[in-house]
Image: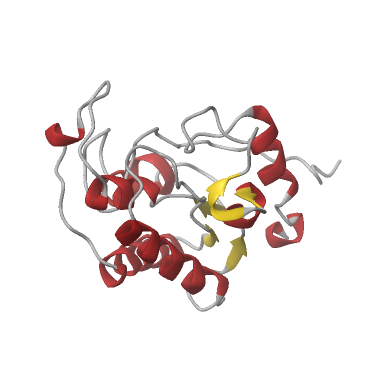
Length: 183
């Protein structure tokens, strides 16, 4: 009997993770081989990374479980971020994996939001939406955004921190995923 319709998902998300720098665990670039490429049968990879690169790189220092001042805090720019995405894509493509890019969700109101970080986020999202970077695109920015202020998450879609989703927020992004991307 065929196994049509049976899928497995390996969620390798790490809260606070970044593409370019270590900090809350290894960077996405450093852990790609171990966490994704070493897994058997991977056909698709969704990349939903980048907000922490922007917030930690551009935002005001803050205290928390791990103070931002304790993390490597390089000043990054749009081209460095895009180069990081390209490295993830090239390494996955070398293993025959299609890479789906998710736009970076709005985060205005989060403790580490800044206008400079927002400008880079908008540039990244424009590049993702262009269809020139990834094999496919999911618009989590649009799914999470507050219609009254596109730079922040819709009320009820974040946990009060303007950064992490609620069940309603995650349901909205789940519904935004076109499953035709995975055929």
